[in-house]
Amino acid sequence: EYEKVYNQKINQSLNIIPSRIWRDTKGIRQFISMFSNRFSYSMNRKFERSIDITSVHIPDSGILAMNNTLKNDLQFNIKRTKTKLNYIRTVNKSKQLLTNGIDGRTGNVQAFKIQQKLNSFILAESYTSGLKTLDSEFFTMNNYEIEYLENKTELKYLLNQKNEASVNFIYSKKKNNFGEENLESYAGGFDYN
Image (cartoon, rainbow, N blue to C red; front, top):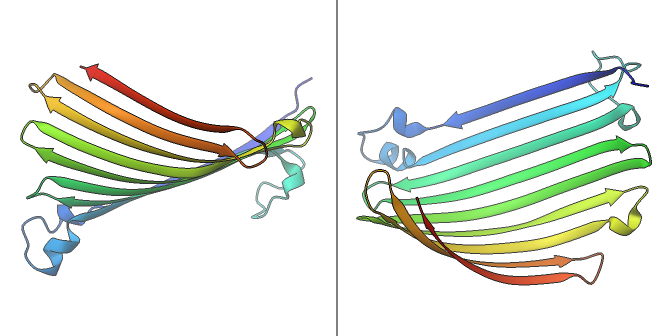
């Protein structure tokens, strides 16, 4: 038997790109135009029909499923040296009512990326760290809290407008704070497009 529910979605994004206004300026405006910021928020909730949909606050007991994502990407672009710096912050939270109870997941990620272009070569370095959790009411032995970090180095060679070759190396480390599981891995690869 299916149960009728309300679905509520909100998607919002804000892009601040000063270089579109102050492209050829000097001084403080030129410095500010090197920055840009992208912010996005997404919310998707399903809740019981007995809840008043005009209510600003919906109690947790009435929510059947929820997924919230918040992301911010701050970029610093130095055009004369062809260097890009990014700081990215992402926060996820989800909750789902299952037949055996509620499963909740969270994710909290920070990433720092730098990219340098030198003629036909692009050197990119990224460092990502975060925390992922699972909280299950019924399957408590599956709960986890994983701290992780990843460092990726990539060198690309642009052969022409359509083709590129790249080589990369990835180091990652993960640790489950609720158990004894640990992972340390090294990976490398080659790609041609």
